[in-house]
Length: 148
Image (cartoon, rainbow, N blue to C red):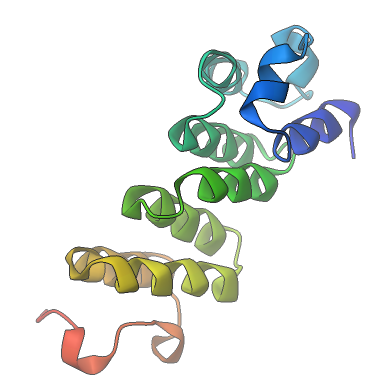
């Protein structure tokens, strides 16, 4: 694991107060040789400004995933720790893990969304289709499946 990746993974387990007290290295430190700098840079800057926001942790996880750098799953775990009762945060976790081929993790988050609200049923189904999740793994019970 690269040093920058280790630092990002470590940040995922720190409290917001601790993160505020850290003197973080310059943004260039987080860049790998193939990182699309503007997106990762923007996510890191936003996280520095608001480390208690689950949305900023999602932004960083998605930027790292797109850049194939760091540990996006650790950042997403932190987002879910901070916003686990927010369906939009859980949905972003579902999509990140589906994109990584981690169906069981994604379906765990999907089940949490289903416990919170039926409003995301169609969105969950669309994500399952988009990422070609086998039907038997899709968490929606038949009575809740929207009509195609």
